[in-house]
Structure formats: C-alpha cells, structure tokens
Image 1 (tube, rainbow, N blue to C red):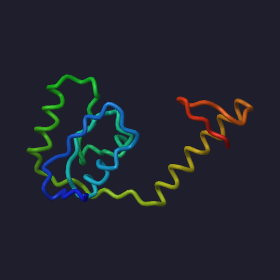
Image 2 (cartoon, one colour):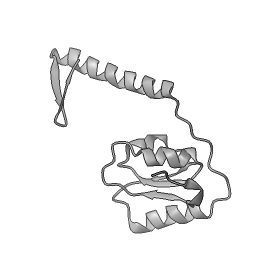
Image 3 (cartoon, rainbow, N blue to C red):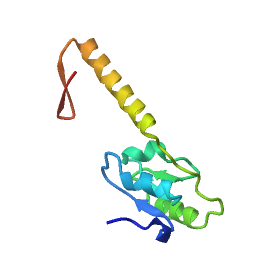
Length: 119
C-alpha cells in the first residue's frame, strides 16, 4: 500500500524503538513535517526545518507544543534527499568503526547487543 503524503499535515512517530523508520524519510521527502521520538534511527536526519525530535520520555506538553508548532508553521519543509551514495558512505563508515573495534580487541568476532559480526 502506498501512502498519500499529500493528505498529511504532519507525521507523528513517537516510537519506543525504531532502528530507522523509513516512513520518516518518505514523509520528509514529500515535504511533510515530522515530530518523532529520539529513539528513531532516522532522528539524525531531521533538521529543525523538517520537524522536531522529542525525547521519548519528555512530558506530553512537549509533544503537544511540537505538534502545534508544525501545524501552524508558515515556512515550507525543505527538500529532503538522501542519495544511495550517501547511504553507502554511511554504511562504509560504520564498517570501518566495526573493523577498528575488531583490530583493537584483537578478535574476529565480537558481540554488539546480541548480534555477532565477522569481519
């Protein structure tokens, strides 16, 4: 099912745990403002012009204030694009960090939150 972002005024995504949240990037690409929790992996891509990132444990009033701010905004949401080249570079940087950890610890496998990586 495709989402018709033209019908959105704002995307509210108060996730408790979201590794990335593709819907957030899709909304920003469609110029829909977002209000999301800081537990979303895509929070790093939300600029102040695109919306708000709110701590998940923030008081309800903070969430309401952010939503009201996005619903009454006068400036359009800026264009959001994340190219495949940039995604590949981010992935490469993460792999380099993992490789450095492996070399530093002098091991072939290590545990990161229960997931084993072999480099």
